[in-house]
Image (cartoon, rainbow, N blue to C red; front, side):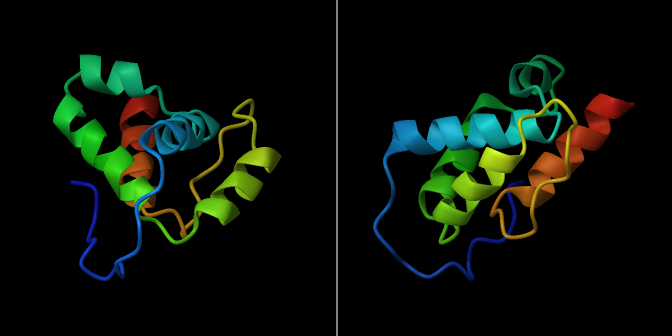
Length: 98
């Protein structure tokens, strides 16, 4: 559900807490309410854990921080293509706009 991670090269994983908040901020910046997605059955809690885990292995974490610094969520933006979770965030955003 979170995309193809087979093309992501191995690297040490980032801190879970740090990446949890990056994913939360990315979702918010893109107009996604993660708690609502879980409540509506569009995202299982286990899948959310996979999203955070994927973020921990992402090569673009520094770019993510810069992007998030420019997007506060007041005007939802599509996630950047460089985000390892972009496809999932796009799908959740579309579901929540319906």
